[in-house]
Amino acid sequence: MKIVFTFQPGKTLLADLNTNFPGIDFLAFRGIETAQEALGDAEVIATYGEDLTEEIVMPLPRLKWVMVFSAGIEKMPLDALRKKGVFVTNARGIHKIPMAEYTFGCLLRHAKSFDLFRIRQEKHEWVPDAPLSEISGRCIMIVGMGAIGSEIARLAKAFGMKVIGVNTNGRKTENADEMYTPDTMVSALNEADYVVSVLPSTKTTRHFYTKTHFEAMKPSAVWINIGRGDAVEPQVLIDALQSGKIAHAYLDVFDEEPLPPEHLFWKIENITITPHISSHSEHYLPRAMEIFRHNLHTYLTKGRDYINTVDLEKGY
Amino acid sequence: MKIVFTFQPGKTLLADLNTNFPGIDFLAFRGIETAQEALGDAEVIATYGEDLTEEIVMPLPRLKWVMVFSAGIEKMPLDALRKKGVFVTNARGIHKIPMAEYTFGCLLRHAKSFDLFRIRQEKHEWVPDAPLSEISGRCIMIVGMGAIGSEIARLAKAFGMKVIGVNTNGRKTENADEMYTPDTMVSALNEADYVVSVLPSTKTTRHFYTKTHFEAMKPSAVWINIGRGDAVEPQVLIDALQSGKIAHAYLDVFDEEPLPPEHLFWKIENITITPHISSHSEHYLPRAMEIFRHNLHTYLTKGRDYINTVDLEKGY
Image 1 (spheres, chains in turn purple, blue):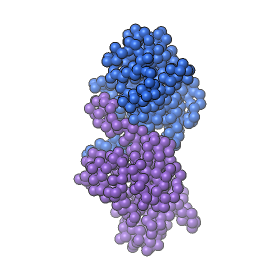
Image 2 (cartoon, chains in turn brown, purple):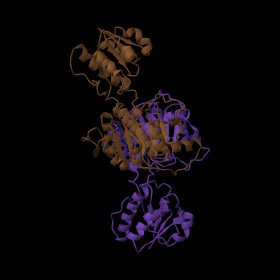
Image 3 (tube, each protein chain N blue to C red):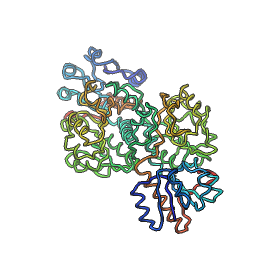
């Protein structure tokens, strides 16, 4: 049995797999191009989820399972896989710690004017006067209350913040003081000092945030997007920022990635950009590999307790 | 009865005092120079604690009480005040929320390489590769486990960190996994990913950190000073940073403030400077004023329950 990685998980983790699953051929490549030949008799593909297409997967005769080593699967050929009867698992759930930390990094960076002081340091300027606030006592709205959103909520309570959560049906969630649905959330936006978007990319979340949302926010509000870039049309966000509807946007995800060098986002003063790294940490691959090993064991023993099976209809 | 402010607490807070204490003359000035004449018959002085000298206070015939609207009183003429029988209260305890938030701002800014990504944004560079870690699972050593240190410890536990505390006698403190004394802490330094100094400036804390401390730390360790700048000799810190004994220093306090433009600290790449603002927030003065109002009521009713009386011998 052959399992093909379209990325390099590193020597240690690969050696680990070979030790734990001695009968299996693990083949790791630097990308889909070099992996192509080996895919022909692959039963399992391990991928970051951005490199498979209908053309690639349809002809594969033995493919049974795709393990995606990330959470977003919007670039996967889900229809083709469903037609072929291939099942998909992903690495959702392992992102919550680094992404919640990233979020509070943004909140505190903003509240403490760190970027302003950095510019002053470059000029050797001792100027204490600056907008300095506390996140304690402030209100955070978290749009998307899954594993990541809930971890953000937990930390927000530790920081003494008010937490407003948004999920599909408004059901209560631990650590949220109030819950709203996508339809009712606009009425609560004027309370939020920080709005964090943790939405995945699905048919219903594309261009989710409209002019109406940003107009309902405080002029001092900060919008943070760690979900997916297509949750807002770039021009809608740019208008909101340039007309002072909100104060700042911290963006880790974009409609188009890598963000092209000529994109307007790069040079708008109240946009801060990081290149889709909010989930990255030294623990990322080991944690994803744990899920894979568990599922591989289930697969080999014909068990049923898979972690993170993806619903190919819903797309998450 | 006359109470002289050597700073401007702002119209709202001043109006508040006049309403609550109608029989009292509150006089607020822009600094000690303009206040000088009014000090002559002041019974109480409200100050940030950096402007009084022995020459100023000794001749004042009516002075009974000095309220310091900050926590550090190392620049106060404590001996002179003791001789005159003047008592001193300060604003300690109100700094814990903003200073703990500032500390986690530094930790996360470092762990998420925010400054590196800022430079890349300026160049419109999409380069995800960077040192990215989690503070979760890491170890923080907090030197000085008073109100501020304890608040840092509480948040550190919420972030899933190991907490090592240091106080004078090593007594147990909530949220600390282990406690050390100034004498024994060196043995634990090699475990710490972050060392936060919250030491006040006293006779025993001057140049507290020596070469030995920095040599015992991990090369990846980050040192954060939010206490007082004289806890380390500048050259000792510079040597530690330039020889790679530790990775980075976040400094909010300095031996000499304002830090002179020609000071080496400004341009050392692995030093990040903020101008003594870790306690600043929109809540600072209102919170300090609450303490003052409580103590003023106590003073006027000849009560005994003063908040934050300073021990003029110990210096805190």
